Amino acid sequence: MTSSRSILDREFARLRDDMLRLGYLVDAAIERALQALRQNDADLARRVIADDAPINQLRFDIEEACLRLIATQQPAAGDLRAIMAAVSIATDIERMADHATGIAKTVLRMGSAAPPQPPADLAPMAAAARRMFRASLDAYVARDADLARRVAAEDDEVDHLYKALFDDLIQQMAKDPALITPCTYLLWCGHNLERIGDRVTNIAERIIFMTTGTLQELNF
Image 1 (cartoon, rainbow, N blue to C red):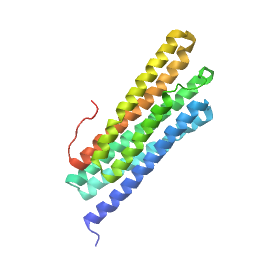
Image 2 (image 1 turned 180 degrees about the vertical axis):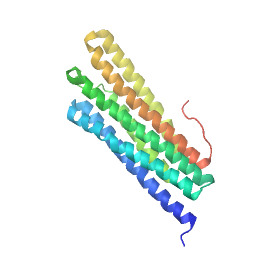
Image 3 (image 1 turned 90 degrees about the vertical axis):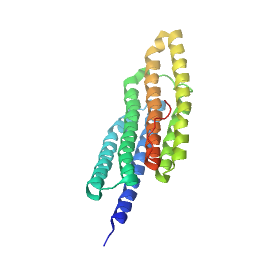
């Protein structure tokens, strides 16, 4: 006879695998959106937008799996925290895909108004946000609250780079009004990347809650 503990362990392993698959799809969406921006590639941008549907569906599948676990296994204490954290984390990961889609939609809006190349601050900002995201997935799998705290602390770097990007683009617009439209598009892209960093911070908060039982706001 299969014990409740073994059923829970099996379902948690499946939940972890689905979460990692969701993370992989979203990280790939961010990468492709940035590539579309660098190359002003409308076809690639459209693929990023089209690929958002299966990401949404996987998030809903994870939520439904969590609800089934609660209904059928009646988990308590740490198991219940892990399930509730998974629902929140899946939502934040899926919202990152929305930010990637936002970049892709901006590429389509740019058209011929696209600048020759994105400003220098955009690439390190994107790299920092994606590095945070991957590390948050590692923290989730390892149930590592200390790593989650370190990941959240890295959001300061993303915020600093966003401020530098914002200041640079505002200066360009002030010097040359013809750059207002393309620089505004780039500000939208930078804002989406900054929001990805915020989403990762939310994930870190839920990992800490899952592992310690303490729910606290980080980077406020």
